[in-house]
Length: 290
Image (tube, rainbow, N blue to C red; front, side):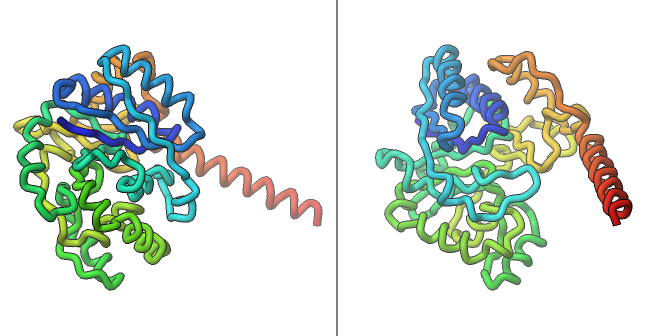
């Protein structure tokens, strides 16, 4: 049985819901609990979504409030909010009864059974977590240039975590220490921090459990599809080969009437044009006043 954890903010609430529905549709018989880590600002939304999940699957997610001030000083950019850092605190905020947990990003869909993950759990021993290789020599070099000796760099969208070992080894303090120490030098937020902290103390998770960076369909569809990057399947012009799965599962949720968002590059271009127009007007008004 799996205890599953999501960290959620208001902006990603819909996408978390799609992910959670996809997980439960394919794995309801092996899910022990769904844990939603969030700040107090979205309690009413979490309560509503949790009731919808209960009505559909007869499983009530566990709401876990977090003090967001603990991570408020950490670096964020692009499509990422401070909620991404909540997972650094998992050992302190999850129930002590949990020995192992499956962490999932909100921008994923689960399209098959996770039953085989039990084989990874049996082989945990002294390993802190299992994750999929990010296949990134540039990130390895970048972290090494920061003075940390690593030989591989893993993707943190899906993590099978030995949370009992995290608690026993006081990992929260180590993660927060590194987050503060390297805050001005990191690029990929808490993913960098997790790689810096655990380095080689991880196990290799099969790519099918975190299939990220796909540009075409695989011969065998992956079990977990991770829509990594800033262009997501909910954007109209997104070309991910498994984009249709996001919409398939969304149609089962309370958000089933949602439409694709505005074309992403057009949105960026429009923001840029508006910014330039505002700057032009501001400069000319100043020139007239002078």
